[in-house]
Image 1 (cartoon, rainbow, N blue to C red):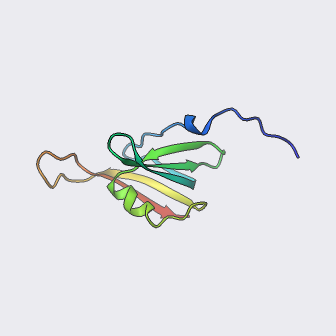
Image 2 (cartoon, rainbow, N blue to C red; image 1 turned 90 degrees about the vertical axis):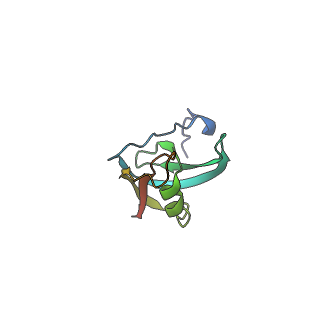
Length: 100
C-alpha cells in the first residue's frame, strides 16, 4: 500500500465564495453547524480532483442540503439573487442542489 503525502490540515480547507453563475459537482462530506458569529452552516465538499473545499450556507442552500446524504455527489448552482421582501434585509441568494 502506498502512502499519500499529507499536505493540508482539515482546518485549512479553503472556503469557496460562490457568485451568480457558479456551479460545481462534488461529493458532500460533512456539515458544521453554528459556525462563526452568525451561527451559520458550513458545508465541506470534495471535487473530482480530490480537492476539498467549504461553502457557507444560506437559506436556499440550507433547505436543499437538509435532505442531502453525506457521501453522495451533487451539482450545486448559484442561480442569482432573489427579491428583497422586507425593507432593510439583504436579498436572498438562490443556490440550489441537484442530485447526480
